[in-house]
Image (cartoon, rainbow, N blue to C red; front, side, top):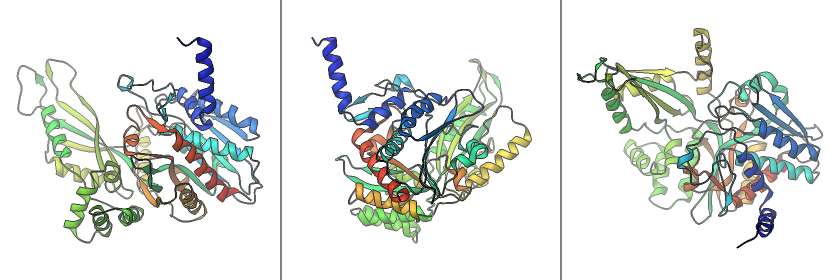
Length: 475
């Protein structure tokens, strides 16, 4: 039997052999910042203790909610060029603990992975960004521009004290020439070969529609044909059998053309037919084949996902209404009215009302607040794309080719949303990257169960970020 002393020695040896970035990620995961409530002060204080001893200027920004903070660190340059910002959110989504095979907040390092909520989204990115800044600081590399590291609050769920609040109240602290955030993917095959690096230049936008079915409320012993729950179920069944048409942005078109250049047949032809978009039958066939990959399915169209149901209040009462909340991730430029028209046509039932629900973060908003939020949501739906060119973009492309030789590097429309809008809306280019290579199985765990990220990918990600930042900021 192993003695306690021997176990402690073994643990110390294992820790000494584990890369610093993986240990840091384990520490970050152990700080439970699930949103709600999204209390991030523990992460802010942890990062402050890591970075301040290296001579990096740090600041913790308190929001109006106790325990919910943003963290800003600034590695100073000579000021001859404007700052570069690297941003990562420190809050995470919650978990269904009973469906995990490991403790989601233990920060376990096992089998070549760091396990836990946020490993991919996005404490892994926060660890990589922080480690890169620390190594640049330790090397005392002369810089022409400041490197600003931002750990944000309230990204998950678009809370009221997210980067929008930070930009409105402390823009001077995060103003920059360009920025890096979460977004594009580094995808590798099951054998570990990196296939492509996608750099996101824009995000899809989250839009919520509410479907409400109406019927007669009565005693459950007297069922009627107009049962609201059945009506809603039929409407959702029709939606489940429907898929929206492909709608490609310029970056998405470039992405699929690039995939076509490196793919075997028949996918090579499918990618090219989809990108060309000239023949409707060929596009439909290509869309069906490509859509077998859920990630590629998501970036080429507006996606539909029922996320919540609400009906009934007693076991012996047939309710007079039943409601489904349906989340759409839309291509920028799509309007709520387009979605409502499309969904109403698919449902094809006058007893089902379809309406747009703005992303309200406060309870019992006034009509004026609702109108203001609707206007803000519409601005976000038409958010500008960051051009796939320029110093930061080109530096990330060059560093990606150095760290992952032979991999395809391409611009990309991120299939979800990020908190980049406050910068893009002010004309600041923002590019997105999850700075670690993962495979298809790893990707399915994001926001799901047993989330994990490979340790070797974290190490390579630090090298990617160091090279990128030094290309951009070194004198």
